[in-house]
Amino acid sequence: MKKILLFMAFIAGILVAHAQPQGPPDTIPPGSRILAWYEGRTPCKEMATELQIPVSEQCAKRKLSLTLYVDTVTNKPTFYKMRGVGIRTGTGKWSIEKGTPTDPQAVVYRLHMGTVSLLLLKGDEQVLFVLDKDKHFLVGNAQYSYTLNRVMNKRSWDNWRNLVHRGLPF
Image: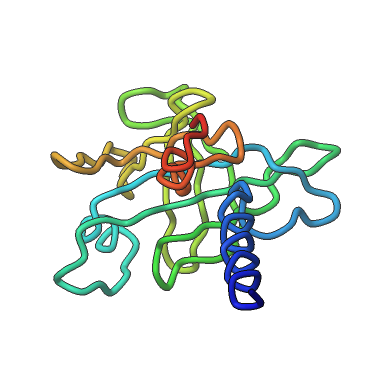
């Protein structure tokens, strides 16, 4: 009987752990608030080349997560947290710029990553497009694009299989 109760407690613990919604990584620092949280999948080798990241030949995709933070008073960019970019994963400063070669009014976010930057064109509030260093669109392939989509709630596609498997709405 003890073994059955222990087994049931173990299973209940696993279910509770998987039921927790996903959220932006880490906690919000004092004086900042989350502006937006984005996720996406990009081709691996091309993104690695753009960011000067070493990758293996087997790498097909990069699963990215980006959280942008702004100052709570001024709403100016403070820093970002990025996952999925190898040695460039972590936090850093970001800034907002205007203009691309085809649209002088375009809004571009620049993530400062040491010696390189990741440039993201703001399509609208819901989507960011990855640009090359000359602010031209990067073109994806049949499986992956160079877009990051805004995560509107804490149930990200990171956890969709668990939600669907349990019969919960996604």
